[in-house]
Length: 591
Image (cartoon, rainbow, N blue to C red; front, side, top):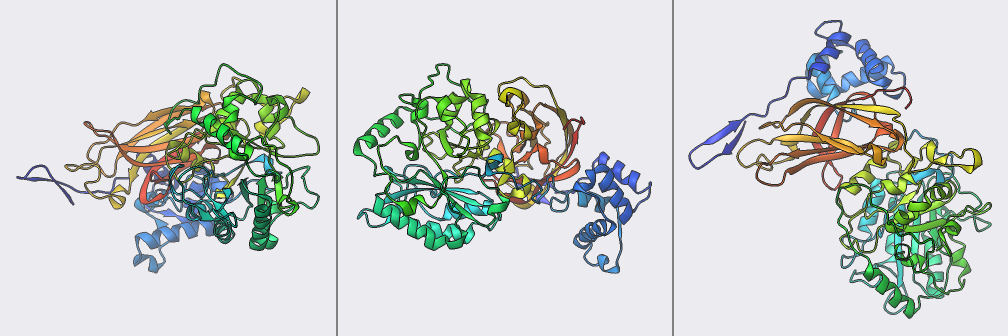
């Protein structure tokens, strides 16, 4: 029983009650229990196979028995000892509303991991060492460790000489960020690289070092990683290896070593960065492309906003030991876009573009980008004016086949929620196989055109039954001082522009366990790359609605049937109890 003080004279009392099972749950129980009051193990097995899509394969009696035992032991710890092996309606509902036993997506790696790295979207961080904003936050190995534990597979390090030019620091150059020693970052990467995933970690380096310090870095890297380090014996790769062949390996990706930055280039870069305008991490449509397109990189501001890794400097190779460590060669393109995106027969490489650079390249060269990414690596990174470590919408990069859509992992916001959602796929291993439409080449070397108008392939039907668990994750007065919360759910799609939409339920007043029973339909042209967005808010008539949880899920991984959907906080960390009961159906045989 909860009490809410209305004024100094009296209080309102509300009881947190457990909501009844939704009608669809009662109907399913009645059907599979043959109208009885108990459901047997075999009846549960039949329900899972026929209504829940078999949960990814044939379910054995022992599997169903194990599920039943777990539920009964949790709900009836004493009576479960007498070996009862049947579900009541309440037990059945409890099983369906358990996000560990009945999650919305699979938790195992299930995709083919034997294709070249270019065939995968890769979980990629930007300025991975920063603890906060891009201008003054301390540098540390802590955000690197957090990113690796979340499954991030690409870590970016900015290398600079220390003040005496005798050692190497990691920091965001020409800012007030305080440095962290490179060796500390390397040791933390080694220790935590494979905590969340056995698949390779790629370290992208931005090198601002003299040749003697490059040699020092080469020694540090070799000593730290030893046999874990993947180095191609013949130098440059003709084809990228597969994630499977690189399990528990570390790869270095950077430009071949060149001489130190020239002071004049520093000045020019600063002035060009200052010209760019900022934009907050807000939800909206895909970025509007520039109309005025110039095919040359030189003098073109959208392409000049490149990381310092990409500065066009006059430097010469000078450190063979450092160069020999580079598994994936990076480099700034010269000339026009067509030359930059040219696919070379016996060579693979990594190309980096800012979010604005991609936006402009996609205006007239969208198919060239897709063709380039079938064999090579394309890395997209936030524009330099995202000082608060905000992010951009990642779908633009993914729809063009970009493998490394680099994000500031230390922030949060709707864009980062989408990134989390994409990489919940494939067991959260940090590598997600790109859809076939991005990898297929047709007659006359034709590839997918991201601008093409497509037919609807399937319709996703989403039913939101109810929610629960907030009273365990939040204080009684967190949402409203005077009464229980008024929750509503927003649900929608992020993906191809034709598929993007958001809808919402009606608010349910004064209830910690809201019941909505509302259904929504989402026609999808590219379900393979779509993300289902789910947000819960608390309606507030006089102020901004309160946040009450969110999650993004890859549509291609949704398990059909009635599912328990766990909710996360703003940073993407799961709540202990808050969750929704939902149903997913695909109305088509094409997908």
